[in-house]
Image (cartoon, rainbow, N blue to C red; front, side):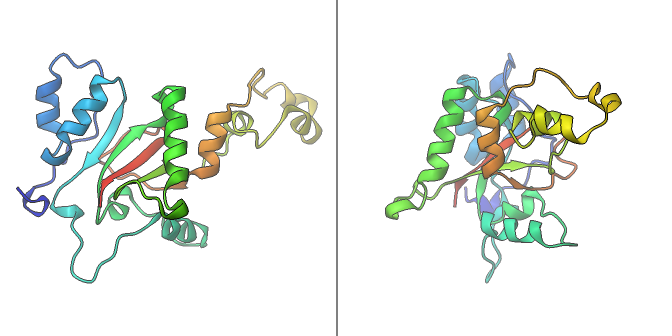
Length: 205
């Protein structure tokens, strides 16, 4: 069966981990070309957020895929609407993983794969790793965890009363900080209710 012959599954994204009826859940929620990969991820304890490999991923004649560089430029332009994940997914089949629940080893492995692509002529087959968020996180806790703010600076700019509201004892998470340096922003539509950080793995081009 060709991808252009596969009708899209429109269920909300689902976490397959811990499901006793895993095989049934995979068949009902994952499109055929990605069922094997999602099954492997689940058995390895890696949380998949959602995936897509159907006729909507096929480019029309003359269309070209939207790449991460295109999104970064678009997100910097005032008034431009943040692109949705399915718009960017055109031309690819893809699997989205929950970065927050990955082991540190797997996070480091994804960083390495993402950095390796395109260097010295080396490619990861026809695959790409993207790190994405559904919005720009700017709360104090996130900024402390990523090292964008520190306690000394906050004490200088807030009043004594407001200082009591600053969350305490938050350490910089180096892997989250690295994720933040590499990520781009993609909007989610109604098909996905997760707001976790994700690595967006375009599995096939």
